[in-house]
Structure formats: structure tokens, C-alpha cells
Length: 133
Image: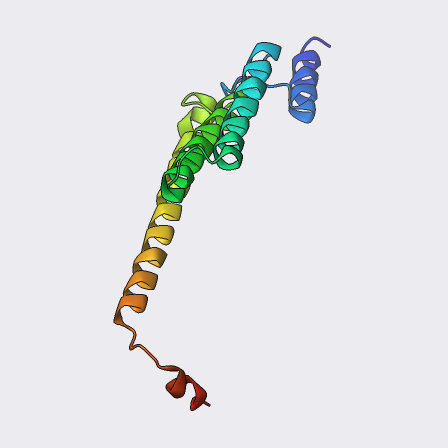
């Protein structure tokens, strides 16, 4: 009878997902509270920057809003998704890095192509546009 008890407990843990061998944290009230407060602050600052017109240059405002958005993504990944180098043996972080690299390549390539298409296109006059099929 004792030989069946460990097998039953293993099956119970596998069925209910109580195995804690993956190394990922499950979070605490403190980490959720810190994440929430940081998220509110990182949302309120860009809202204030845009609504109050703090900077005259829209480029500076856009850069700061995007930078604060990137910081907020990191806060969400750490506080709410519990991503770290230990979870899933580091594969979660490796998948995230791979995804970031692919997105960066796709975005920079798209911007590069659009810039060169815009630069190298022949300007069209309104008369030429009327004669197009």
C-alpha cells in the first residue's frame, strides 16, 4: 500500500499543477502592489506630458512617452508575469530576447524600406495623377 501512495501523490501534483520545480516565482502582495503603483505612475507621467504640453517639441514628448512605455513593459514583465532568468531554466527570457530581436529587425527593415521608397520615388504633379488609370 505504501508503494502506491507516492505514485498517487505524483499524479495528484501533475494533475493540479502543484509541482514547483520550474523556479518561477508566483508573486506576492508586495510585488503586485509595487507593480500596480509603478504602472499608475508610468501611465500618469505620459498623460501629464501630453495634456499639459510640457515640451514644445512633439518629438521630445513622443520619445519620452515611448521610453516610459518601454519601462512600463519591463515593470509588467517582472511584477506581473514574474519573468526572470531562473524561470523555466532561462528559456522564457531567451524566448523574450529572440522575440525582441525579430521585432526590431522587422520594424527597422520596414522603416528603412519605406524611407528609401519615399526618397527614391519620382515626384508626381497633379496633372500626372489625373492621367493615371
